[in-house]
Image 1 (tube, rainbow, N blue to C red):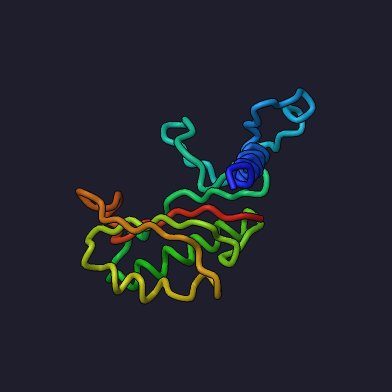
Image 2: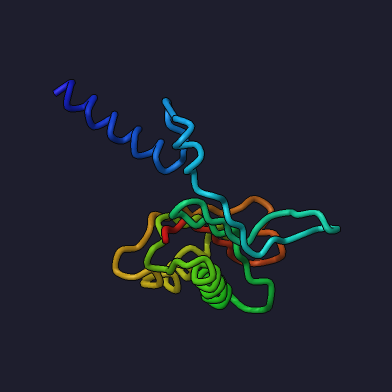
Length: 153
């Protein structure tokens, strides 16, 4: 039992090291073969890069938080944010069905049910893991909801 658990842990750590390129015994060949980071839609402030709309690393896509900064209730905001996430994923070569993790930031936790009603079914039959929190002081830019995600290609 103990050796089986050790074997499982070794495989887990090896797979994590392979995805992140942080292997314990990384060789020069592995270091050279590490995937190149690609960034999309870089947002600048006073001509200085601030953040990217999304970043690809290997077969993973990390999409920055998206909010909706116009009039509307939580359902409108949620629908528009999900559409924006989908556009960003498609640009990066992924899709909503390939999302692994979503973080949802609500202006008001009382909007959880209405947001979930719009969210439901948007990621296919196998939805990603999700964390939902209410933010102290609200979501930046007066959006009622902001979401970010991690997907694969």
